[in-house]
Image (cartoon, rainbow, N blue to C red; front, side, top):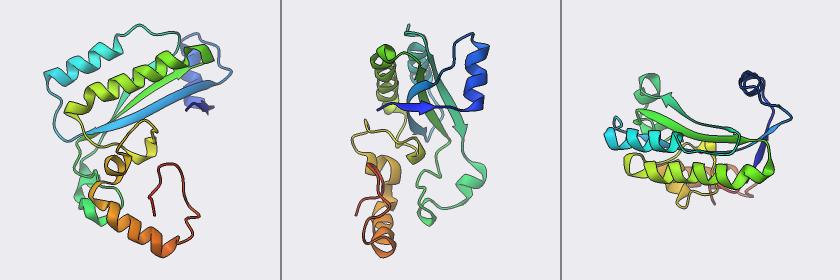
Length: 166
């Protein structure tokens, strides 16, 4: 699945790289770290970040958790990953449709390679390639979220390919 990105920050980033900016296609996904990354995890990240790819911008963003996020028990809200230390978002951006397979495979490969060191996924980076997405996004909160959905959306009006199922 490709999406079109038109955002000022990304345009500025691309212009700084000397690339044209008609619009970019992208693929992203995520996983969460519940422990500090060990040497093997860091080597895995470095390996994938050093892979030669067609023109584009491939990156991994670290989003720190803890603090106020961790102060709320995981069962008290829809967001189950409150005890994670940080979220990694794996991202690939490209402009020429012919480059899509290489960039999509890079995102798939880095997430798969990092799974021994990570778990779950952040629901806001929805990814059709995650097999057990209900557990990855919602974890132990899924049964309660399904009950809430049945109570407030019995006709399943608010649905999407990976939204809370009925």
